Amino acid sequence: MWIIFALLATVFFGLRGVMYQWTSQQKINRNLLLFGVFFVGFVISTIGTFVLDQTWYGWPDLAVGLALGAGSFAANGFLHKGFSVGKASLISILSGLTPLFVLLFAFLLWQETLTSFQLFGFFIIFGGLYIIRYSNDISWSNLQGAQWGLLAALAFAFNDLMGKQSTLLEADTFATLTSMFGCGSVLFALSWFLKRTQHHDEDESSHNGWSASKTFACGLLIGLTNVAGMVAIISAFAIGSTGLVSAISGMNILIILLYSRIVLKESFSRQEIIGLTAALLGVVVLRLSF
Image 1 (cartoon, helix red, strand yellow):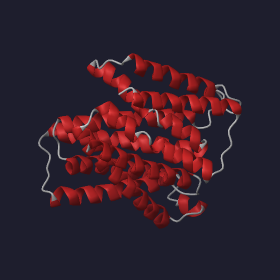
Image 2: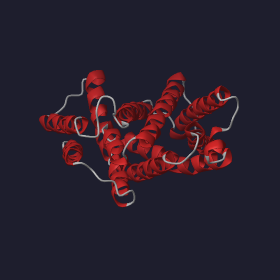
Image 3: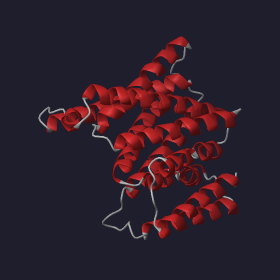
Image 4: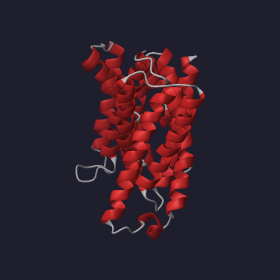
């Protein structure tokens, strides 16, 4: 049953990524958009908490939820920023390295060892990244969003580890998500408000194109895929292994890559094709290693 939840998370997070890429190319206020994403998650999670009579059983439950919120604040911000300055395919590949980071941190924190097959996948992935790094379009002075994709992968890996931790604590799913989305909502709302203050209360999104109400409403729509994906992945973590669930859910990059190739008509240099292929092959090897 866990694989069904993991595959559902793949679909929902893939759709979220596609919408992030599209909105990143529009004239909108990123913080206001993401405030909407997290606010609808907070509302739905709060309703679920009361309807299902869920609760927090102690400060560890609450702390994990808040950590998830802070991690999601960083991850979603990094991902959306990456899509706004870099190629969708490149950002997708880099942010899709989350399962690899989950394995590495699980080893460092809990001494979970890597098999030879997993190490093989590790070297293929970073070999691909090395090639991408030295492609014609990417240099130290022009990373084209690569750093944001890697930061998003690290932040999403932290979220996966915290999501698993919540199941180890036997925390109620919607109670945990209420803390998570509540924390994320506050952080994005504060970021939006502070940025408006710095601009002397000028509504940047309205000035550049999208009105504040339209931006927030779009965030609410994207948030539906986000909360659905979180419910699915935590449900998978509850009955599946951390690395395997993270690896399968990480396949959402394929949905984004398909979108970038078919809809955006992105073209790649020869080095980028080799590097992206190697990185994707490494991710596949990593999934087969479980």
